[in-house]
Length: 96
Image (tube, rainbow, N blue to C red):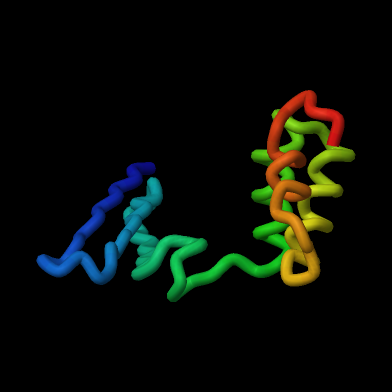
């Protein structure tokens, strides 16, 4: 089994095309091409995926409870009167 990856970017770098080709032991070629990486504006993350990504990055630094506070604050950002309430949640060990 062989795996070949190729990335191509146009001169204006509007898109990066990634093509993976898997060559099976019996000679079959399985190809997958993706024009936009997951998370790009053209291929956005679903809400569940974005939440999982946020948790995977925030919980190890700030903990589960602070992560919940932070995501709740961001969800109601338009109603937050003082952005210091948000920025305090971003500081590890602060008594927010």
